[in-house]
Length: 114
Image 1 (cartoon, rainbow, N blue to C red):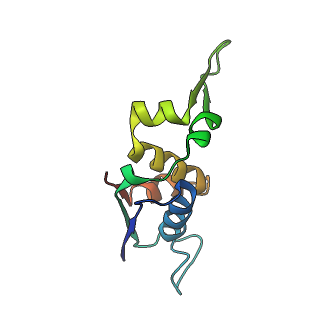
Image 2 (tube, rainbow, N blue to C red):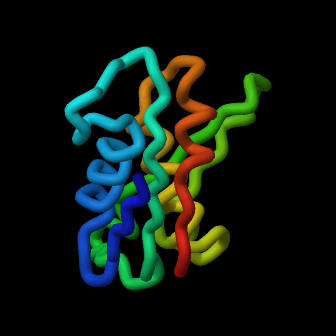
């Protein structure tokens, strides 16, 4: 199945949770947790996402290299400016998928267009 989600004037979390649900195949009657569904999800108008100014300042993405002093932080607004809305959606959806072997296979079925 091929699904298309229009992200124009929609909240980031609403679009991401819907895409994660469709990628898992939870909407189909033949859902099985251990099988990969044949769902393809395409998100269009990613640049039209509704992100409030307050969320752009308050939301912080962190990563840690494992070395002393290796904690890197980036605010949501800076993340969008540097990497764009498409990469932001991919990162958020990846965080909503289960942390197992299927995760990398499922995210390949996602395409995001600005």
